Length: 356
Image 1 (cartoon, rainbow, N blue to C red):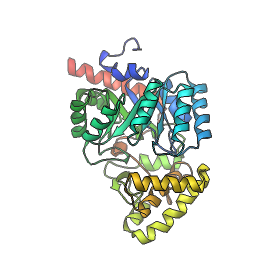
Image 2: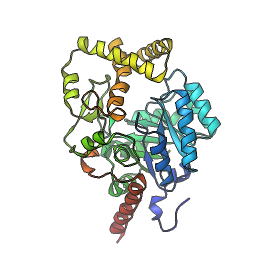
Image 3: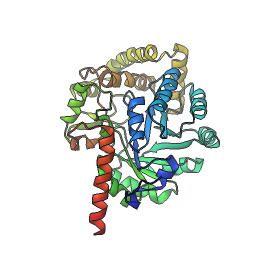
Image 4: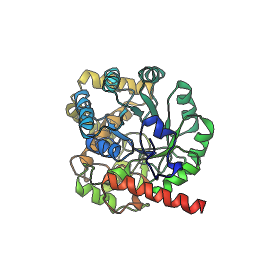
């Protein structure tokens, strides 16, 4: 699969595993990573991923078809293993020949087996060595190890410490995530033993991204010191740009936060066409499997609507801006093809400089 003239070090295990030219993955960002962005990434030689957690099953079906219309290159779909219709989504991926299924949280052992038996590559995101050990034992094909610099839900261990730990623990390919924006970062990740890098914010800030321009400008104006990790959005640590909305959520008590979260959870139900019974069933599953309080369940259901307010509606005054800390290193809006080509060129320059 390696293109002529590309440095041999840039043809890694995931190039063969995913069927891509370059070891570069675009992450599955809710409301952001739709068919257009995923297709552009795959066409450019990386692995594009559709974010399906905020899609209905028919919307996911349409997104997969649209990607296929735009490119003949392999792509992936990001899933939530606890969705009520996960079995139907897995069937869809298998039927449509989707190459990769990625997961923001660990899939079940049964899910991994189902996908592997059908020839679909499984790739969960993990934030700790013990999590990598567990899913590797279950038979996943690769993992994304996301360090604390990463955007959205993230852990507390920096990428530079997490990545070597995970690489030394599992035999499957490890993709590095958290703070990567350029070719030098790709070479650094390879030096740590990774098989490539996964990036979200860098792809969000492209001309192929459907995020409103007013929101992109807010991202471009952020520095590396303008992000914060908060649990006030949905009860889990999440890195976002610090705004007045985040400050208000941080100050709010659980008593005042719950009614707003419940209203947005019901709005999300209407947006996605989820029945009230399914929403309650999902809440019960979250409460049981993740040991959440009802307030935390409502907050978790509330989060997608807060993100939609910015990423789709372009209203930063009512939403949140998930981002990696690397946002402070990005100052332009190229196309996805330009981003991928630039990363490869920078990586080759860095490799030549190291080898003389």
